[in-house]
Amino acid sequence: MNNNQKVAAVLAIALCLVIVVSCGGGGSGATTASTAGVGANGGVPASNLSAKAQVGQKIFFDASLSASGRMSCASCHDPNHAYGPPNDLSVQLGGPDLKSPGTRAVPSLRYKDVVPPYADLLDNPDGISAPGPGGGFDWDGRAATLADQARFPLLAVNEMANASASDVAAKLRKTGYVALFKQAFGDGALDQDEGAFTFATQALQAYQLEDASFHPYSSKFDLYASNKIGGELTAAQARGMRVFTDANRGNCASCHYQGAGLNGTSALFTDFTYEAISVPRNMAIAANQDANYQDMGLCGPVRSDHLPAAAGAANKFCGLFKAPTLRNVAQRASFFHNGAMHSLEQVVRFYNTRDTMPQLWYPTVGGTAKATPDRDFPTYGLITTQYVGGTVQKFDDLPAAYRANIDAQMPLDGRAAGSANPMSEADVQDLICFLKTLDDGYQPPTSAPTSGSCIN
Ligand code: HEC
Ligand code: HEC
Image (cartoon, rainbow, N blue to C red):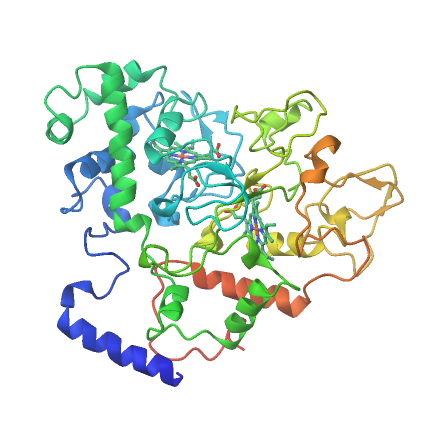
């Protein structure tokens, strides 16, 4: 512990003695975290949520509001997985029989309280540091508020699959929390179908904004950033953080960082911007079996205000997806908008070798498959067959007309195949160690750990 940290630690203890209530959590004191399991078990709601947020909590875990009767928000956004998916599927199954596949990976719902509204500005005012599109909800930013967003899963045919707002309203009138609903939104709140549906989405928004379990700031990084006891990074984590910020190595911070201080919180690990990094096409997504189906993020097909003007014409929005927060990313088992990757190590290696070894990530056409790959042929990629000859279909999920949109920042700077990687093997391992410090729910060990790959 250095001197600053000692001072901070002493101060923290002194403050705890004075204002007992503010210690032990990242919350503002306005709300109390409901522990992850509480809602899932249908238990008591956190008592000092507003009435609207309490309704939202009920709805969030209520499977009776789906066509299948078996799916709630929490089925895909599991509180035990940082409100991300509970499994390693690229996309989840929903619909009336829970057999209809989605088209995009499920994001975590943590830290959505600080997302600015979507804007395409040259000089973004609201905490978006870079010029260009930023903000908004979903991988394409199409929902302006959490309430707007909630309309989508309730009605989507491959999610909760209600036929209409009226369908949702009819189900709401049969729940056990009708009285609470009326208390929160007024006696006539369930009378009008469209009105009841809108109130339900407002309730979901209030729950996600108020309940501290959606923004706990309880990672090791938060302890580190606020100079608190237990936040001292190991040697490997500290080196990993330098890789993360080093413009000549990981350079992750240029898209995945928003500095400390916003609303008095610590870093968010996204700057809310959109970029094209050309993640490989994921054939595990049913919609991708159709060669004409093309998920291009900001330019559609789900988002509809930046659609390509004419086939093949330049459109600066095509292929751009949101740079998500990296908080709790080590708790995920499917990554990127299409869930194409299944481990954090694979993601970091993709950043390191997309350009130097594209054959590990994109399919090769022509050429001959080697029966036994060379001993030094890496097997961590999406493609594990080594080819002699043939052409690598680099950027296979973005039509050629839009490839000029692909971001050329480090570490994806477009360097030639076969050249040196931006990060060394040690950098890759250190970076992964650092990313793991962004997991919430960190408990400092009682004695200093003496072994493990993230220590030295
Ligand atoms: C079948 C799985 C599924 C269910 C059920 C589901 N979601 Fe989602 N959710 C997703 C997917 C997939 C996305 C990303 C959609 C996109 O980018 O187009 C998403 C995105 C979101 C987002 C935006 C997050 C961000 O990073 O911007 C919010 C908020 C959200 N969902 C809330 C909810 C709420 C509230 C419910 C219940 C009413 C719900 N979801 C039900 C799969 C699901
Ligand atoms: C040019 C901006 C940019 C840089 C630099 C960048 N990223 Fe990303 N990152 C993105 C975008 C955009 C996405 C979403 C892409 C998609 O899904 O198509 C993303 C997605 C991710 C994801 C997936 C998260 C999830 O929830 O699925 C991880 C993990 C990640 N980045 C880590 C890193 C690391 C580690 C580095 C540094 C080695 C890095 N990124 C550098 C823009 C960037």
